[in-house]
Length: 560
Ligand code: ATP
Ligand code: MG
Image (cartoon, rainbow, N blue to C red; front, top):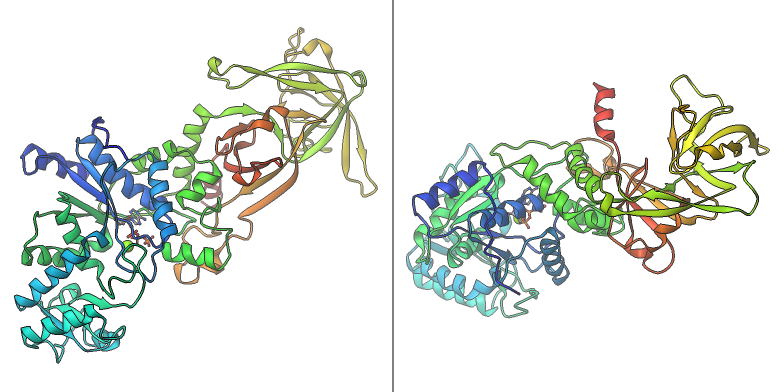
């Protein structure tokens, strides 16, 4: 792993960056040091991208550094698979921690010593009450808690019991170490919070070396202090923990004094951003896995074709605020479209094919026509597309009895086939059920390339492929949830039954045979698509990254 690049980017502006800027100007710190502290109990999601963009972004903009620190204090829920996925996803997003990869578990010995320090100072005690008893005596928002009967245990006895907890003499749940602060504190986090619990469990990094594990609160601030983090940036739900964060730092001989700042977490419509629920979606097989393209995980978004630049742009666009709010999924899709419109090559693909026979085009003859790879970027070059007597057009682009504003193909109607010719529909062929299965058309040879020498106009330009095109499977993804704000306590009921629609008989122009996995392409008039990793061998499977238009805005206009 290399050191982080020293390149400094222009600094954005929001209340956290303003604090950092002020601190650096006042020379409170020589340099800014931030961290991104995921718990390896699941895959990262788009909410984490906001936190990553903020922490790594600040480090880049102000010439500091950002650490990646695994908050691995609960071995029951944490796995190596998640550790690996998190590292992969942070790199994919475009950020690098350089040599600064840390784990809360790196500090277990130091944290244990600091726990003993609190015990010796009379500020922590071993409590023999069960988890239920502790919960029952914590009080409520309006009533104070009650002191544990073990609260005034002599210091030596606390020290002895705590060491025996570490030595493995007691079963899970038999005892905990608690801070001795104030059972009457208005802030419940200060009512003698648990610092250590007994857990006979193997840890992905420390194995069975430990059978007591620090709580999140006992690990977090001290890890920040050890790493000399200057600004410890987290989401608003930790605001009520800040007094405890400060109390621990005030009462321990820590090497530095970080400060915690809170910002609003990302919440997106039609989406749930909670690792617990995402885990349940995976375990309950409601999705194919953590990288199912419908998941809001970075792995899912990557498989779907979302470029990392779009995620970085999106988190910049939504900004950083102090009050929680819900961001419209359309804002995210806009960011994706904006990047892909610039970068994606154009190709033609017919998702739901309808056969067209050009009656006046010679049998067994083909020709190659030139098509632009990108309309705004001549450097992207051209390719050849094959035209012949038999073609496919999109089923939706034909109507036998068109209503007023339908300008595409209909009996007697002339339209342009992109990069090719004008064609006119002369007749329709139906099957026994009366369904249209073929259009009989004629073409005008004088319109080659798409323009009529006599200047006559057509109202529509359609995409098309030659009948000998490639066959592909296309997966059209819609929102995973059917309602804008899914109910976290009964999320299964809110799942969108139409979140995946699979088309098995799409036809693609031959240039798509070599489409690279993970490189999105615009299928003209349809949207952005990306070849699925499962189709690396022969079969062509494409995922829809995003459609061309904002379907969400349409929805809301309709319901408004
Ligand atoms: P979840 O609620 O999904 O389980 P978490 O907070 O438990 O997330 P962590 O692994 O502890 O997940 O998160 C690492 C960092 O990412 C934390 O600093 C947390 O504040 C931040 N984070 C988590 N979810 C979001 C979100 N939706 N928006 C912004 N930041 C987030
Ligand atoms: Mg957490």
